[in-house]
Image (cartoon, rainbow, N blue to C red):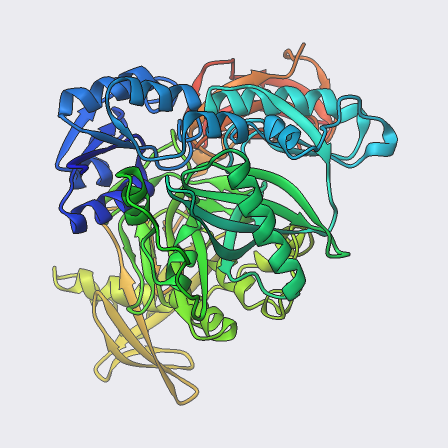
Length: 617
């Protein structure tokens, strides 16, 4: 039996595997980069081994270093998690060659299915080797890995070469494999997948369908099980195809077979992921199982029951990212001060209060999972939990998730993979609480009053505070009188540094207020404010046309031939930044002349660093 498991991964999935191992009495070993020295997965494990470096290429993608770490720590088994080397057949062979148990499918099955090109060949599907105008639109995809990395939709033939180059670079960075291929892009399709689990005795379970159609940059955002709206015939076809794919490669362990369902209800095979999926908790909730525990059982050679358990109810999962969907999904960094969700839902995360969100890895903070008897109840439960969650720190996609779950197209199960292409502007419209600034000001005044300030002005002169809510600035005023705090149109029932109760039009509302250290950020319920100085600093002005880094990252490319003095057109790409395993294009908003360029390939830049200046024409 397995006694010690090393997880060859980081973050949320490492913590998830450790949780099951602890319940089973199995010791755990973490590996960590220098950037992850104090990460939650490093702290949770019974032992940890350093992988020198910070980038994935230096650390989590170095299979020989991970195998050495497992041997040095006395582990007898390796769990790959997902991403990184989880679908790397050579890594699986190296683990087995070291005398360790590989908690995954045989290397031959990985080799057959983990490469999307080989998987399609096995299923009798050819990729597009010569793309013509008649083939458009097409999808460029990385042959290895997943998570939407190395994927590009191409609608114009003139863009194909550039997108192939970008996809190769992103795939190499994320998976250590730059192979890409091209396939037809199905417009208006739904992304539906089937969870399978197979043992070493010939039993293959099909554990129902999942719908993962809500995606940004081809990476899933909201998933659910079972997939709604499928006919019984189509659901049966998908399950049979998944079992056939597993049996074709003598599969063992957990895996997922993915399909694109066209508007005319035809199933198109996409790939088989030879690993555990990010969205596996919805299947666990519906079938009442622990997939990691079953992976361990299969790896130990134990048989599965002849039939899988019976599904019950409906489950939904939302991925909480540190990103700003309103600004091209820009990743965010900084301190996660507080992350908490209401009771009754499951929270899988690789972070805890006070942890730093860095630039080297995926920006996913957590997964929130709700299970209920029906889809409508699960949807309401998840949306309500996200709405009431406490998330203090960098900008997140929380509001987008809530708005998506409550959108009519989703509630009626008429969504497809183009959901965000159609609705993103509406879903990201700011909707701040108009009374949040007043609550923040009153809480701040209470905090300062304990130190002798706050009430020295004459009663006739109001106190004034300025805040920014996103791109909007506002000013609030209040007075402190013998009768207490007063503000126009609002009755102040209670105010202290952490809680403000206001009565507006006869309705009392509570505002929980938090502020950390000397920072300017103020968190009022689900609204984030930035305290502004009474009088702006005139020295803080930037030259017109200044292009700033939207996130910390690495300059990976500068447009060919770009130099100071060059004429540029509106929307022209000047350079590319890589942050959190994704590439981000920096474009000029207007036509003009490049008067300054402060970036070069390989350069590390900080948030808001000046990259270039374009003098508008």
